[in-house]
Length: 508
Ligand SMILES: Nc1nc2c(c(=O)[nH]1)N[C@H]1C(S)=C(S)[C@@H](COP(=O)(O)O)O[C@H]1N2
Ligand SMILES: [Mo]
Image (tube, rainbow, N blue to C red; front, side, top):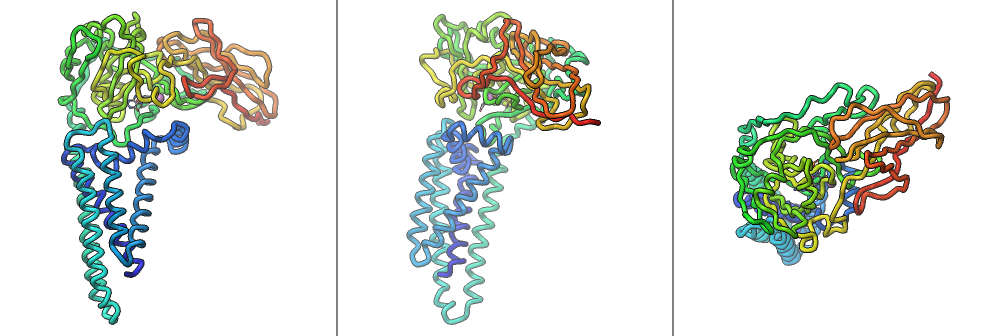
């Protein structure tokens, strides 16, 4: 068989197999799609430095890059399978079978796997093998005809059969997407109006120094940093949502979205920080969260003595462990959030319900698409990131960042305003100092404080001679702790060290 034909057969069979699995998954359970399951497994198995690299390099596109990479690898395998099968269909058949079994294993191993999930990868396996065998027989049946130089009809038949399967694969893949999306989450979200009983206080005009280079105090939702392991955003309707509260409690509960709406809704301005944030990094944002008090809810459930960890689970299987005392402490402001910046939670923010606990990094506090809460102990359960060598407990560290000047920026010599942000969540910032070229520390002016659970901005006017400079900043919190200059990487419990910026003052 010609090499081009064998390659086309391999590629089309792979596409047919993936599309068939995706279609069946769309009908029974979207996360059972073998393509997505393999991708999600890859994310879970990726060592965290690689994960951090992916987030840093590709940002929010990291998952698209992964899916694209998987498509390239699968296409490559299809090509190899085709080329190996020029004389006999068995190498390709075997490869289709092995890939199918891998898909099956990935789907079954997912924590979200449902009873019938195996049907989707099974469809991939069967369709992949059958498509390959059929196309192979069509292609080789024409071979003698080619030999006697009546190539045209043979090629036409071959093109017709591969074209038909390729088109079928396209339709099946789109159908799978459509069926998966038919659970109309957007409509569910649009139907919700949130009327918090207590609104967050207005943000004072001098809570940020935007014109001098700091971020705006409130982060618009499309600018809010995003970090999660979800390859496809879970699609859970508010009306279908249930939260099970169980484990070391006196009263097990199952809550509905309406149950939450019947509780007093409060709006709070809170900053969220990711433990992966490097010194000077971007993974920090601030929003108005609307939700119900988590400590009130746990009091209703009756936490038994001895339970020190709240284990929470997302609908996609991601898990999180939060110290019970951080939630129950007076004024903890821990909440089950259903709204952000006045809207119901956006889908990628954990619609319909997520958790927020000020003072703790997101991976130990901010479960999105929350569906299960178990009161347990730190000894008894390790959540997702603790299983991957991150710390079990991770309070947010007091830190500061320079936003102006930017790295290697050329600024006018003479008077120049340096500005940035600082945070000591749940404690409050006492002061921020800067120094230039290793000189004496100088106090900066802080913005008006909104509350201790949010970031705070700072600015200072410097008078600088022409030439290269290095500016450093350090924050001190209300407990009297001043940021250490010792640089530490984000793993296992958050980066430390002073942020510094090299820039040049030039004669204007
Ligand atoms: N279900 C789920 N919730 C999650 C995560 C996740 O991977 N899955 N990541 C956590 C981490 S590490 C952070 S920093 C915050 C980020 O929330 P955001 O994406 O809304 O900014 O969500 C937390 N909640
Ligand atoms: Mo995070």
